[in-house]
Image (cartoon, rainbow, N blue to C red; front, side):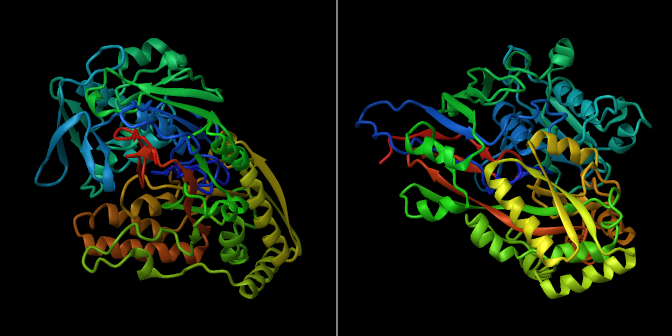
Length: 565
């Protein structure tokens, strides 16, 4: 999920805190003013007094879209996850909990999945949620006329015929998803997919009410009035450019009795200092803390660090820059940034250095249970002298003594500090390199990424499902999130085998992923920077908020506001 990790790809320049990102998500970061809860300074409720079930929260930027077919980033998937429900949803410890589906059966060849849907689920306009709502939504996601990025990316090679349909080679009716009556959904896969069950909890696979979507036309999902919900909450007071909005409890939700929170207010705040000030005043119930604020608040009783599986890195566009098409130039950039100093002094929120392309404590070997990252070790480390040699070799191959590169990144206060550090490291350690900063709002960065209109880009990705493929599938040739022209035939073959002939051979499949990751390092596809954590001030009154490793960053279905301490 684009980030912003959230999501993919979580999301705003540097939110040293989010995926998440999906897929893929995504897309960028982890330390803006957003956090996980709390009116830190209010007095606790008196014993026996009913506590108001309201949270006042911060978001790092506007919501780019609420159309599930078009969503690609952390913020969109967060609010889709709060207002919508798919076949399943993530509960505690990444356990899949019943959503619209109550159960499913899988054929012996693992290609046909039959989901039984509950008959008491409703849309917020009173319509029943049916199997056809999933058929319509999934077909819409791969319909080339709709222009979804994640539909072809998430469904291609997974749902039967999805790739051919997204290329306009087959009609959308041939997609491997059918309704067997109103409450039975039959899904046919292209090939056995070990992680398919977790995909059913991801935003791209949410249902849509066909009649409502088509009645709204181009206005669909542009405001609260042009949206329907079938999940725990509904958006209120939101338009596509809104700087503030609310989530309110959906009383028509099938499991409304479980939902305790009545309302969540959101304000866009990009500056961490502003967020902390609001928290100290008791105005908001959550505040993310960036670099310089961490030392100041580390001893605060509400200070919390939450590890994440979101990775941040530099994308290097080989299609726009002759220099970046040179592998030695890319390797030099990958090795020229002091990442330990960056996480210790600039980020300073519990984030750790990333020297690979799959995060720590995310995927384990199916036999030995050894962590993926431990097996492959450190593949891309800070080595300034080696970086200088590779740089000079690359310049010689290009016949140049100087190179100028644009650096696309976020525009939040924390992002700007990070951007300047990275630019300074590159210019200081690589003689003859000039970096031109292009710092833009998150939504604009996504647009420039899709158009491949950048040289170097600061990006992040939160997992879309629990499998190494969510990371390694990013960089296949012409992949939906590649957007930088990287291509390696051997790498593509390994990822293809992992998703095909090795799909039901977990050990060989895992080993193929390990080999593929080494190729990314050899080719310097992207320059890994760090694995994020969230440093936050969190009110002790907030209970039951789940931190998801994929999809929506936070799950509030089971949350509540307690009496505090």
